[in-house]
Each structure stands twice: as structure tokens, then as C-alpha cells.
Length: 56
Image 1 (spheres, one colour):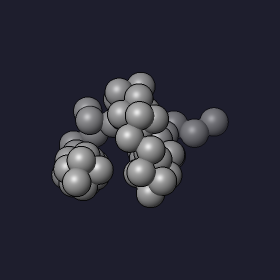
Image 2 (cartoon, one colour; image 1 turned 90 degrees about the vertical axis):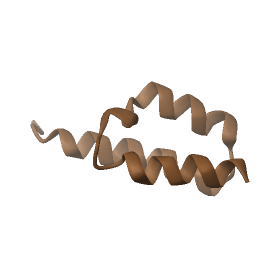
Image 3 (cartoon, one colour; image 1 turned 60 degrees about the vertical axis):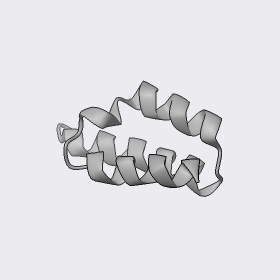
């Protein structure tokens, strides 16, 4: 059993990054909401940059 919650956040981020690389805005935003990654303070700066770059 994995008790480290960082593992889950990193996996969720990797899935989000896949949508970002594919420029799949619809699934990117769905996963961002579903995964609740915005609550992870360590990942927040990266998420903000991804969202801004996806809009360009």
C-alpha cells in the first residue's frame, strides 16, 4: 500500500501534462478539475503556466 500522497498528485500531473502536450484543452480542463491538483501548493505554479500557455 502506498501511503505517500505525493505519488497520486504526480500521476495526476503526468496525465494532465499529456493533455497539455496534445493541446487537448477540453480534457485538460476536465482533468484539472477532477484531479483537484490546484490544491497542491507545489504544483500550482506549474499548473498556472500550463493554463496560460494552453490559452495562447
